[in-house]
Image (cartoon, rainbow, N blue to C red; front, side, top):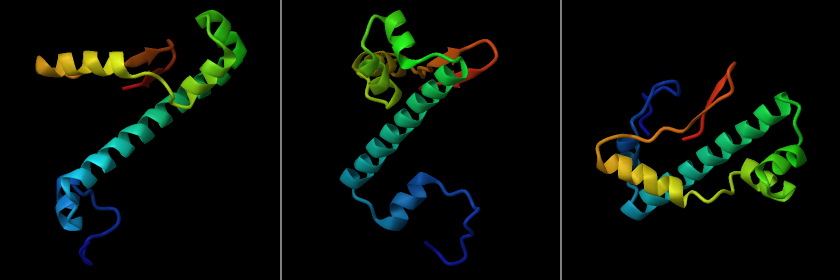
Length: 112
């Protein structure tokens, strides 16, 4: 990075790729890991909502008809995204963007 760039300056991802000389494979890996991290953060936010609503993982599991361990995995971001990704790809093919939003009345949570 150039010395004159300040830490608070916004930098475009395409500029950074060029500046660091990332290959296409490296860029893909960075994008994949960023998406994974974002997924984990969003899933963790679901756990925060659950806790604010004073629900246990076991209570959520009972409502969903799954095990408490499955709820724990969901809250850690370990979910099967294939169906959502297929739907997102379909929407993208039509020129749109799929948005997943959880609405809890007093707050909303963007999931994807």
